[in-house]
Length: 388
Image 1 (cartoon, one colour):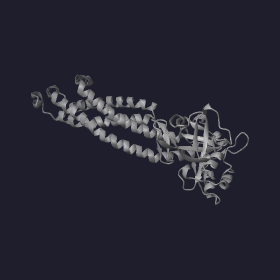
Image 2: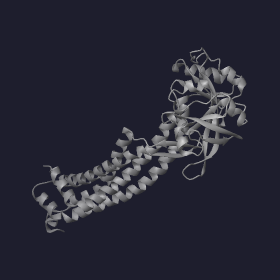
Image 3: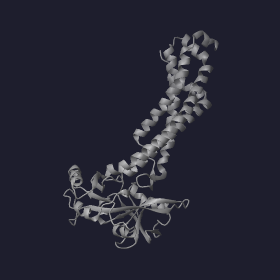
Image 4: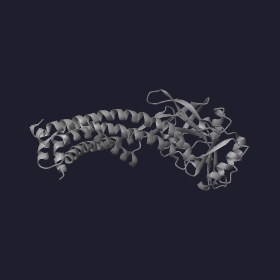
């Protein structure tokens, strides 16, 4: 014979204050837990979305970032002969040499300096970046000191808005356009003519080569040929994998640090649940004795009290996830360890994160409710009826 769930719900409602405080405590812990996972996932997705499944990126051998890579022109000419490369409408291979440097710019919010990625690109680069859309102004004119800025850079940094100018590489550059790269890390970059940037920053080599492949399945053949060519000293990656690798170290750090803090907070929430349920057991000893006298078994009592704590934790989980949902409307920034530059990204709530948060809430409720539930189940009928 099972105790009706209605009985548990009425008991929770009758203790509004203690129940509410326990739900709130669990909810706040779940909120922090969910926020940490959303933050790490948002950073990962921002970098992963920078890559394209059809593109391969080539960097100097041993380099794990474009910033530390260098490919001389003699090698770029060899790379441009690869038969796997797709062709543009005018018959040219869709292979772009790009320059990546960082420049220190002041933030609009506090005037403090921070590194921003400056990327020198070509006409082929624009064909490779299919998600990039010009939203304001126009493209730069080749051979001039004109640049376009990602929407995040334009919003966050001084001198990067449309019509403004910024000093870089001993020259002053005018922002003639703002672009949107679909939430990728390109939104946190400044783009301009690669040849002009190479001259201004005194960089005679390209940082990377990006190749649009005719068929993505041909990647392994191209990788083997390039990396075994004695004239070249390069490593070849799928573009998506290359940028995903850059997110791993910082993403892991965010998770470890955030989850450590969360688990510390979770002990406080579980103690609150234990206190609430022990109080319920003490105040309802007569009820427990009556239930036992009516024929309910120990396991029914155990399950009933455990269910109450699980209901509390479930309510806390819903509140925590609901609050975390609104974090998706906030953008944050951090330093990308691969480029030592600021990257702006948002929180991302995904189904796996939602499920993990609910499981975390239920585990807290189970751990907090089990000791009081065992105490209630072990009470002797006579002692319970006496209120002992």
